[in-house]
Length: 70
Image (cartoon, rainbow, N blue to C red; front, side, top):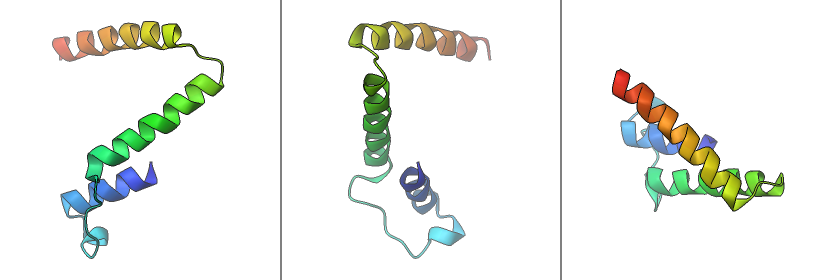
């Protein structure tokens, strides 16, 4: 999360990050790194691919419904 926040700071030009350069993969690469960590935690806690698909579908539908009503 910290590395993603840093990349966002660099891209957005926040004062504390002006001296740094964007990483090779940038914000997108840091997002993927976070997804890898989160998926590792999910599966190491006993989650299955089927559970992941079901939960993603349910939560994505809920998120979409909220976005549509906003």
